[in-house]
Amino acid sequence: MKSDLLKNFWYLVSAYSAVFVAIGAFVFTLFQKQDQLERELDALKKSKS
Amino acid sequence: MKKDALLDRILLLATVIAVPISLYLVFLYAPLEKTMGLMQKIFYYHVPLAWICFLAFFVVFVLSIRHLVTKDIKYDIIAHCSVQIGVLFCGLVLITGPIWARPIWGVWWSWDPRLTTTLILFMMYVGYLLIDSFTSEEVKAARIKAVFGIVAFMDVPIVWYSIKWWRTIHPMVRDGKSGMNISPKMHVTLLFCILTFTLIYALLLRLAVRVRTTEKELEYLKDSLGEEMI
Amino acid sequence: MTSAFKLIYHLVSKDILAELRSKEMLVSLFFFSLMVIIIFHFTIEVSGVSLAEIAAGLIWVAFTFSGIIGLNRSFSSELHNGCLQGLMLTPMDRGDIYIAKMLANTIFMMTVELMLVPIFTFLLNVPVLEHLGSLALVFLLGTWGYTAVGTLLAAISANTSAQEVMLPILLLPLIIPILMGAVSATGLIINSGKGIFDADVLKWLKLLVGFDIIFTTVCYLTFEYVIEE
Image (cartoon, rainbow over all chains, first blue to last red; front, side, top):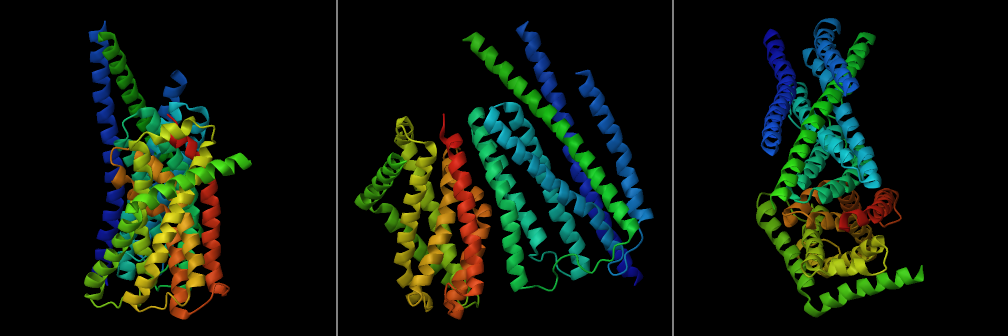
C-alpha cells in the first residue's frame, strides 16, 4: 500500500513539474526573444542616425 | 504607457503571489479524496488548464472577427499570441490527463470526450500556427488566420457533442472523472486555481504580445531602411 | 438574385466541363480510393481484422483521403492560371464563387463515391448496392459538409507555400463530426439494415445536416476574406 502511494506520488510530482517547466520555459523564451529583438532594434536605430 | 506598466506590475505581482497560494491549497488545504487518493490532486491544475485553454481560443474567436471587421493588425497580434498560449495549455492538459489516468484506470489514453476534444483542439490550433509559418505575406496571413480562428472555434462544440453522442451509445468503462467526491474545501481550491491560471494566461498574453509587437516593429524598420537604401 | 444563380451555374458548368474533357480528377480519385481499400486489405486484414466489419469506416477513409486530393486540385488550377483574379473581376459576390466551387467539388466527390459503390460491394462483400437509396443520402450529407469546410480551407491552403500538406492538417480535425455522423449512419445502414427513417440513423443525419448548414453559412461569409488581395 505504501509503495502504491509512493508510486502515485511520483506521478503527481511529474504532472505538476511538467506544468511548471513548460510554462517556465515559455516565459524564458519570451524574455530571451524580447532581449534579442530590443538589441537588434537599438542597433538598427543607431545605424540609421 | 505608464498605466500599461503599472497594470503589468500588478498582474505580475498577483500571479507571483497566487501560484504559491494555489500550491498550498492543493497540497495542504484540500483534503485527500476517498476513491482516488493522492492522484486526484492533479485535477486542480488539469481542469483550470483546460478551461483557460478554451478561454484563450474564445478570445481568438472574438479577436479574429474584430480583425476581419477593422483590418487592424493589432488584433491579429493578440490573437496569435492567444493561440500560442492556448496550444501550450492544451498540450499540458494532454500531458497531465494521461498522467492522472494511468495509475487510476491503468491506461494512458481512453478516447473519452473531454480528452479527445482537447486533442482535436490541439491539432486545429497547431494548424493555425502553421498557417502563419507557411504564409509569406503578413497581411494575407493575418486575414486567413482570422478566418480559420472563426471556423475552427465554431466547430469545437460540434466536435464535443458528436463524440459525446457516440459515447452514450458505446460507453467505455473509463469514462469521465465520475467517482470523485468533492467537498467544499476542494471547491475553493479548484476555484482559486482557475483564478491563478487566468492570471497566468493574462500575464503570458501580455508578455507574448510585447514580443510579437517588437518583432513587427523590427520588421517594419528593416523594411523602411531597405526602401531608403533603394 | 437570379443573376447570382446564373453566374453560379456557369461557374459550376465550367468546372464540370473542364473535368469531363480531361477526366483526370475523376479517374485519379477513383483509382486512389481503390488503392486505399487494397492497402487496407494488406495491412488491416492481414493483421486479423475483417474488412467487412469496418466497412463503413473504410468507405469514409477512402472518401476523406481522395477528397483531399480533389480539393487541392480544385484550387491549384485556378491559382496557376490566374483564373481566380479573373473571377474576382466579374461582378460576382465573392461568396457566390465559394458556392460554385463547393457545388462543383461536391458533384465530383459524389460521382467518385457512386462509382466506388460497386467496388465496395464487390471487394468488401458488404450490401452497399442494396441500400443505395439511403446510402446516397448519407453520402450526400457527409460530402456536402466535407466540401463546405474543405473548399474554404483549400483556398486558405493555396495561399501557403506548403499547399498540399496544409489542407489535410487544417481539414481533418475540423471534419471529425462529419466522419462520426457519416460513418455511424453508414454503419447502421449496411450492418444492421436500418433505413434512413430509423431513429438512430436520423440522429446522425441531424448532426450532419446541422453541420452542413452551419458551416456552409460561416464559410460563405468568410470566403471573401481569404481570396481578396
